[in-house]
Length: 135
Image (cartoon, rainbow, N blue to C red):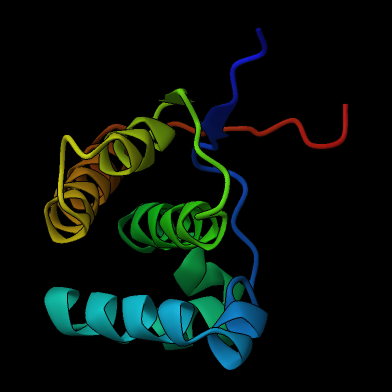
């Protein structure tokens, strides 16, 4: 017996333009982007679609952007029922929403707060993060 799993990504998979095609082609995606803008009180959709990259790379924006994109993709695969979900770092929150342990709005608020706190900590204690892509 084969079980399907959804594995959600962490920070580092963001890019300017992410989700724009989904927003333009899917009522579901449009609704979730619009809801996220309203819940957060920022134009996350504009940051995702237009950048600039420096603004999208700010952890306080990156984390809700990736979370939102991940939740949209999972919801668009509504015909696929995964028996399990997991996520790398930030992706854990998308997995919790997929599993029904958190609502979309709860997850979005938590991820925004997480990103703000991580950004503040990174500004206080300088460091860096690297993502290996295409290995």
